Image 1 (spheres, rainbow, N blue to C red):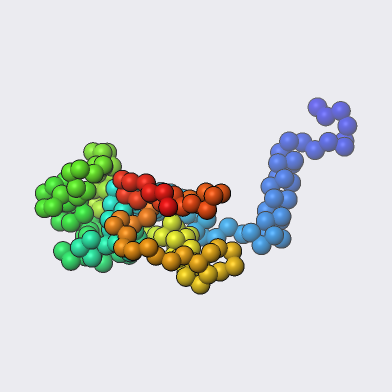
Image 2 (image 1 turned 90 degrees about the vertical axis):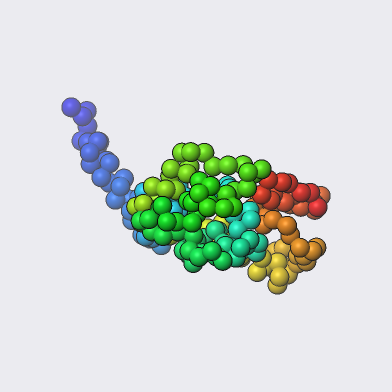
Length: 196
């Protein structure tokens, strides 16, 4: 079978390799955290629902620009709702305002007719998520968390980034940004792009 006793059989080699990897992770202090171990199935909000809301809703309903006092950038803010009450009622999609507005059952329909609309499949995902209890949590190190850190650093004028001063009222929340080598800033807002 093996020409020499200096070789290990394949199953022993695999076990030794796995043991070595586990030991290396342990020594490096990189033991997997519960957040890392959580699969997308365990957190349907973060993996399925939040991307839909970011795509269609968060431009007008975010931390800084919250029409009708409704913020949809985090699960906690969705649960607390806005002027019209909670945006969702877990396990009751027919009574949940977010779904009623998406379907046009309640006025005004959201997103507005002149804005990009979620597909029937995306609306079905939201409905199913609510029906199953609106499970999940805001992902660790989410986009909202990153923007809060960037804003805090900018206000402090940290040594790694220049201080940012506002240039007036922002009509829609910023959903993406990039800084060019020339120092110009490209801002992505709900359905528009601006170069400063």
